[in-house]
Length: 258
Ligand code: NAD
Image (cartoon, rainbow, N blue to C red):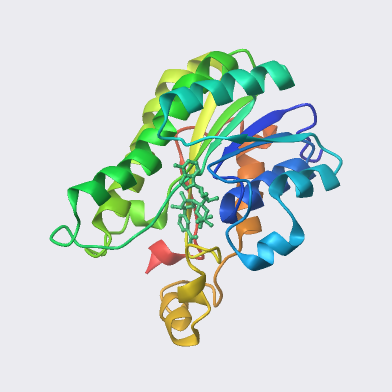
């Protein structure tokens, strides 16, 4: 039997652009309705904007979709998002914690303000979304939380400390939530993407020399696209992943092998 996410409702944070958009579209392709939770409904790359908003793309696939303006660092925004979704769609089955920001800097270069901002969006935002989605997820028959981590959670460069620490935190949040919620039927896993061509990475990956530096560190001779992460999310959301819990799934072209 193929994957079927019909009648399931997914909330995708940071779903307006990049990886979140790729995840929203792939979940919808398999039948899910999608709520896009972001600070802006417009994608942040010109080429994405030309194809329409994520809500447009999901509706083009024949699925229901809504945009709910949400800053994942705001407790009231997040609580409102989950309650509005449950009321409008009758529940929440899948939460994808994808909203995130990058930015470099060694510990010496990192201001307290930047450190707090990265941790607030990338890590505390995922905690808040899980906290307020849990009362709805436990009522679902096939509930999932999928956290978007990074290969940076495992491999530190010393030049993007706050980001890597936030993603290492996501890996442990994944395990903690899996232990807490698994017995109640909510499977929690993470995906660790490698270099994916989005607004976050386009400047690097569109420069042939810098792209080659990245590609040389992987097993496969190419970088990824948002739909590569979308397909991994489809697997983790599906019944096929019923025995996968608390796992960091590397979708990074073998970056961590070398
Ligand atoms: P992106 O910049 O294209 O998209 C990020 C989205 O998050 C945007 O739509 C943005 O508006 C939204 N966002 C930012 N702050 C927010 C907030 N406070 N509340 C709600 N939404 C907010 O980036 P992307 O590359 O698609 O990254 C998505 C996730 O994937 C991030 O968590 C990132 O760390 C992770 N990741 C990306 C890569 C990569 O190579 N692109 C690699 C590893 C991990």
